[in-house]
Image 1 (cartoon, rainbow, N blue to C red):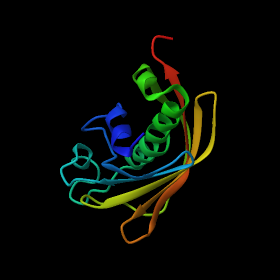
Image 2 (cartoon, one colour; image 1 turned 90 degrees about the horizontal axis):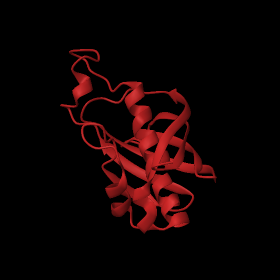
Image 3 (cartoon, rainbow, N blue to C red; image 1 turned 135 degrees about the vertical axis):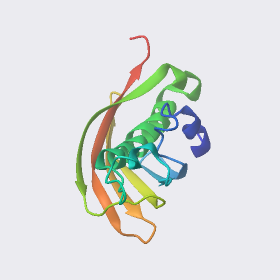
Image 4 (cartoon, one colour; image 1 turned 45 degrees about the horizontal axis):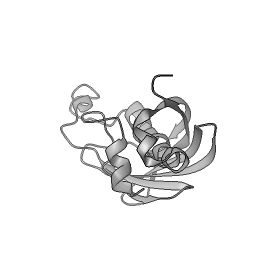
Length: 150
């Protein structure tokens, strides 16, 4: 399945989608990018006058890339793309370390590496970088694919 097709299946939509494009995608890893627009809704109250992107939003961006998008791809490989609309991915847990702030207008690159994928459960090691290559955050995220109606 092509990366653009994976993006179409991601359930999160504006204003809560934090993945603009998928740059690389395989059974073992994913690379995505997102630009935090200056008018994002969460900047209004998060350090007014000197806004920074909340850590929970950075975690969400990493989960959307390393669990949701990669998980959709792996699920399609397992059950077939025609069955993919019957599945959804739920976030289950994470562990994250943060090193640098992300400011309005900055673009980040998110790299996810599959740790394991069994019984529709995916755990990925994720890292987020600024365009200059500086590491923003890293950790693990996990989720589980669930067939709708079960």
